[in-house]
Image (cartoon, rainbow, N blue to C red):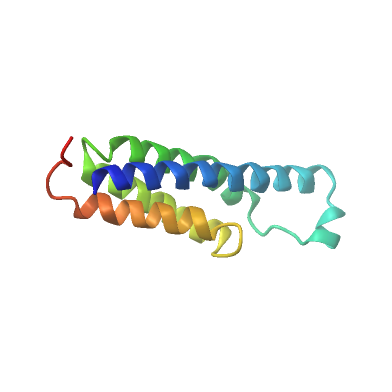
Length: 118
């Protein structure tokens, strides 16, 4: 289960990085050209979006890296990344895979009782 948590958390964190790049970039575009907000839609809290765009993938990847040795800490980090992504980005077409993968990885890491056989 720890190996599955590692793989799912890593993939979820990498997908989260992709979502984070585009979200951070969108807030940058709106900061420079505010009239784009009228066409594409405004962002209520760009600081939250930018913070979660950076922190959630880092938490997910760090949690995945810890899943084999410190499974409880790793699981909590991946669940924190999941909560941050859902809170900042919501659950939609582009966020469903990183959210589900990080969430499942966090649960698997927390449920792992003994190390996986080598």
